[in-house]
Amino acid sequence: MLLVHRIIPRIPLRLSQRFISSAPAISVLGQTFKTDSWTNATPQILNLVGRDLYKDPNHPVGILKSLVENRFNGLDYTFYDDFNPVVSTYENFDVLGFPADHPGRSVHDSYYLNSKYLLRTHTSAHEHQCFKRCHTPGYFITGDVYRRDEIDRTHYPVFHQMEGARQWVRSDYKSNEELLEKIQADLDATPKSSGIIVTDVGHDPVENPKQDYMSERETDLIGQHLKRTIEVVVSEVFNAAKIAAKEAGSKEEYLNEPLKIRWVEAYFPWTSPSWEIEVWWKGEWLECCGCGLVREQVFKNSGKGSDTIGWAFGIGLDRIAMLLFDIPDIRLFWTQDARFRDQFREGKISLFSPYSKYPGSIRDISFWLPKESDGEFKELHANDLMEAVRANAGDLAESVKLIDEFVHPKTGRKSQCYRVNYQSMDRNVTNEEVNRVHDKTREELVEKFGLELR
Ligand code: PHE
Image (cartoon, rainbow, N blue to C red; front, side):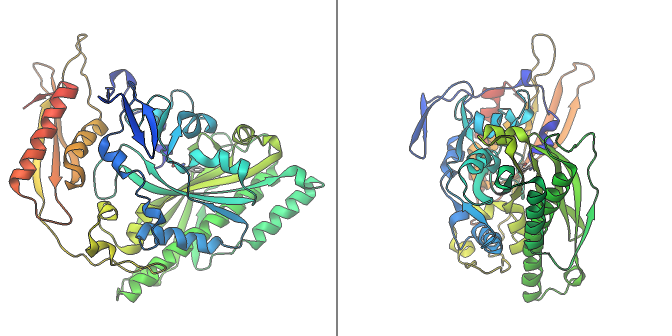
């Protein structure tokens, strides 16, 4: 989920298919945007803009947000949750130093309203505003973020992030010594998390270097402040998950063991050094949160200059809320079904009890990829196929997987087969309905991408 994975381009852009919206303009949250060849935000996605699940105190995502915010109350942070999810490419990418050819900017991965505006792909898009306007040393930003992605139980095109950041302004202090003392005092004032075992790999001085404008001592102290802060968030949340599981009667062994976490190196265009924290949870390392020391250029772009040093992190809320509340499918967050929504109450972590299990219905889509005039395949980006499924099936699509791929030995043509599982969380779906939806998706794929169905 983190943008760090986007360092590796998936498919050369030359092969990309742009979506020309048929409407000359689209309206989002009362603002109108002229469409152009970049427009690819579908009506289904735009429909979810403004649902603001994270502002609902009785929704699992809202409950998790409050849990974290309450922990940091009184510790010099401002809490923001009102930023518009429509941002400019400058805010989402340029101000943070994303290179022009960074794959995160691709139309395959993001939802564009037009070439200049998109649905934010991360809450970091608001960092520069907050560094400028915030009157406390630190801040948190919560918001919905949008990414074109695969379809399965843990991926949904809208999810939620909480950004945290903290800054120190050198000129507020008489000397560097005084500044260092203040950072040390802030570090001492950060609550220590108890009952966790931490492994830290440090950072590679060449690949993931300290910035020139910061001293060793500043880098070290601010790095410690950042890590301790995130450890507080993580231990708060995961210990709450353990208590909820115990209350629900679980006797599993991991509930009595200390929480294990590790720091691994990461790369983000706007922080250096950068890390990710992983939590050992039910037998696997779970990526939780990307972070790092904010680059000088970002402070400069925020009108602050080399006078300011600090850190930032971004944590994905949905995956964690799924663990905390034992929610098996991310689509449930979006259901309006009272059998889901009535199970959760402000301030309380309780395990979800499944209210129904409707059977799934599997359909395959097999096709030959078209060939370009130069004889090369015209690849279909997996996210484009996912989007066609979503556009027709909406939340009926439980998962989509590439199950077969081969090149015909004689003709050299390439074939792919994707398997879609249609399953509703709230009702029974008839075969006719599934067939109708599936046929429409197939037609759309032929029309848009020139596939030949098999
Ligand atoms: N915005 C990053 C992501 O979504 C996370 C991050 C936030 C990393 C702040 C560094 C600093 O992947």
